[in-house]
Amino acid sequence: MFYDLCVPWPKSVSTSSAVEYTRSTGPIPDLYRTVAMLQALGYTTIAYDYELSGKIGSNVTSPIQTDVFSASLPNVTFLSRTTILLEDAAQSQALPSLTSKFDILAVRPTTEKLLLAACTSLDIDLISLDLSQRLPFYLRHRTLGAAVARGIKFEICYSPSTRQGDNNVRRNLISNAAALFRATRGKGIIISSGAMSALECRGPYDVANLATLWGFTQEKGKAAVATDARAVVVHARMRRRSYKQVVEIIVDKDDEAHTMDEKKGGADEDPQKRTRQEAEDKKGELFPKKGSKRRRANDG
Image (cartoon, rainbow, N blue to C red; front, side, top):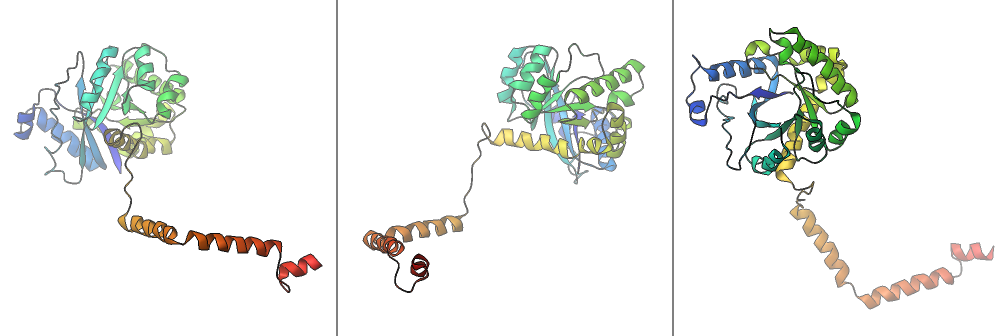
């Protein structure tokens, strides 16, 4: 299974307009063509991304309707995601309130200090850097390695390289992606499209070939849209359903009944009979009976 965890949700589309969409004009038809193209290319899980910036209140609601295209594309699993443009440390206080509203939480830090906080302390699933622009900080192995050790992944969006635009964007993407690959030692990186139109989408094997420009091998490039991307979804599910890696263990009733019977049988045994048997066994070890193997060994 292949995953694309970044398809931007149009900001002009509200919850009501998403339900009453048409495929003739407007942003929803573009979104439908994009996800339909991804489905045709072999992707089975797609995440809609809604970007938040500035001051984030506790009353933020998700405009994403993950089931808006479910009838037309029944073989695709749709998820909701938010990416916070992290410009101030105070914005991280809104993360707990967003857990129940989005499936995946991602941040895009703008300073080295905020990047360090995201890697070491924030309860998130994904760090998505804008690699099409010149980064205002260096990517250090010690900082990024802390995030990888916590199960947090880094994201590369390839759509800037497929758009018709400034060559500096492609140049920045190649150099920054290669720097990210070196800083993480090739670990904990996923690749998403970030596509806003169907023309910007690429198949999983084309993405793996594109990743070789950034230092990836074919195997790592394929894993970045498959197993590593799946790890983000699993991490997000565990974050929502557990607290500090503590999960509930459900014991099978038959096994529990069998264990209780064993404990009960051991408790019903006469303690005096058990003590007498232990004394006889110890006596047999000290004074073996005549003709026994232990006696013959001692006589010899």
